[in-house]
Amino acid sequence: MRNLLIILFSIFLYSSNTGYSQDTLNTPNVQAILYKGIGNKQPLVVGFGGSEGRNAWASRYWQKTREEFIQKGYAFLAVGYFGSKGTPAILDKIALDEVYNAISAAKQHPLIDGNKIALIGGSRGADLALLIGTYYSDISCVIAMSASHAVFPGHTQDFTSSCWTYKGKELPFVPVNEAAIPFMMKQDLRSSFEAMLMDSIAEKKALIQVEKINGPILLMAATRDEIIPAVEMGKKMAARLKSYHFKHSYELAIYEGTHVEPTRHFDKIFSFLAEHFFSDIKKLMVGNKN
Image (cartoon, rainbow, N blue to C red):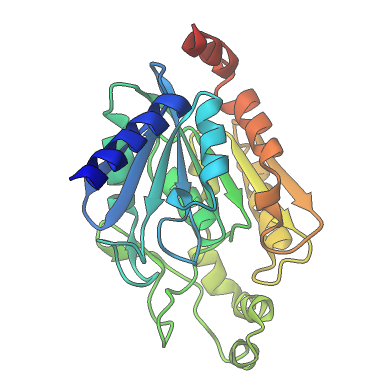
């Protein structure tokens, strides 16, 4: 009993000192934790991890960055969509609508501004952020770090199903072809993806329709990405946005480095959000302090 009181008191002190609290949302097949500041009408940033699974944004590793979002006036929703308690075991046939339901639940909180929702993801989480943005018009900003421009297979042994579904149907995906197999056996992932993309017909069917996103887009890619040809994929998405005369701001930021390099540039992310997503964030922060 004494230990329990100490733990509860520690949580109280932590919440009081940091000025924020957290709620675990009850959403089927998705683990969602909402971190909130103390102000009203907080714009919501939703974070997706990548193929490492679990709820990456709820981890200690990302705690400092997550808290920086909150200190800047945003609420933050950390989403685990596979590999977490109560979620699918592997990255395969993940339901976009179930992930969106977690976002919708967070929108209902009285401290959240439901008209300001930004998604941020890395690697497969970046693909998820782009896809959610294309299917749901209330998403008002997407930040995609090391993103693919198309849908690829789920992480099963035979790679015969899609990573993602929508309303019970698998999204079209670029399949593993014979040209990719030797590279996969050597664990050369980038060359595997490049070989798969030789199937231009399948690629066309699997393209993410980024032009449907209802808000600004920041794409971030690195030149020596060892997982995917991220710069080339980013350029394809930027070209698609240009060809569709995309009405919102968009940018492709390219860095020297490997697959994780974009995650080292949150200064760029914060400035992009302040300029294009919620220009009144400084005013909100001042209001929160008073």
